[in-house]
Length: 458
Ligand SMILES: Cc1ncc(COP(=O)(O)O)c(C=O)c1O
Image (cartoon, rainbow, N blue to C red; front, side, top):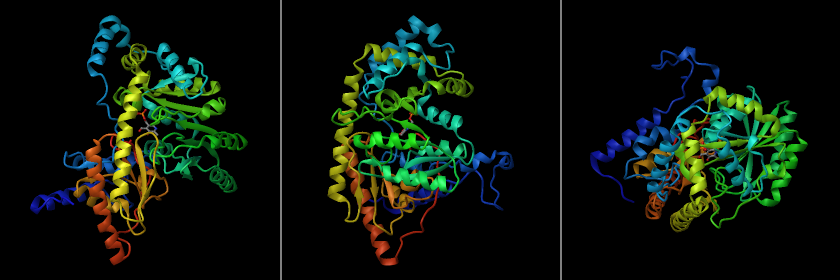
């Protein structure tokens, strides 16, 4: 393994450690005062707000010599930037007074129609009136939680789950109960058991939050045979489903799966996004709500942002109507498939015995489990020192689980860098396993709660 030498190494390691310890919750532990003079003023709900551990490391992890397998940033290199810049210019020249003006909280009507055509690819029949455009699907998550959850309500979610969702749930003081996944996604028996247990404990379950396709961070997809069953379980138990589907069109063979929303339009809130299929920086996503919920959703959106950015919506709309966007998604898929192949073959070649990982057939992520005795959060500074970064598992659970898990994102680096990153990570793991064999657990079990999303953890 390539390691930096001399004082550079010592300095680098010290910096990594310092950054890790700077990652503190907003509220200090009782009796401890930090430098924030507003501490006593924060609302109780801020107690659950902690920065992502990778965010703390970002300054170091984003140095060019570090291979980052941590962040889920889409790889935009294949976008036709010249065409897009000409289109944006035309848009402002032809329609600038509309594009640069406030719009409705509901979203631009033409875009809502186009969104319905996109959702039809996954079997959804929707009316444009029931679509609410949001500032990324992250805003949709926040609004849905705001609409449905009081403090102490329970949300059922896959374990592990998306960091940004856990952050929103924590901000509204909802409690998350995780249900296990296997290689075929959420396990229906696990869902039944979790619902029965929470009910027995007298807790109110508000919804199931699920990412059925190319899961973040799990990398697995919900089997088609399980979909109707999960919808049925939620119906029987009178709970809503929040279906989050930003990766659904990124199946490596071009395959798509029937949305849960297509099975039960009255009981599923569907979240979609252009972040992974077009441009994440435009921040355009949407919520397709059951008709009865739509009005409240528009009101919630209005109070959050007045309206989503008109210019960005019109850019997306023009792109969809003038560009071969399906062809563009195919190009993205091919790029991601090449990177998926690179990471899977490198893992196979380098990882020590006792490690296992998922094998995604779409999306951005591999979820890995390491042998007993290795703590992935404690190992992270050592990995970054060895010039490779990943997202440790505990951030993807609301309950402190995940210390033997980590997420590897293959979407952004080149295949060559991915192979090098995996080689470095395998060497770090080997030495952690050696330590664990010699001294027992290499490091104490880390507990951390939900984190706020950041561009490096999405
Ligand atoms: C599962 C999931 N949901 C939602 C989001 C948020 O996406 P957006 O950029 O649309 O806000 C992400 C981003 O990575 C994600 O992975």
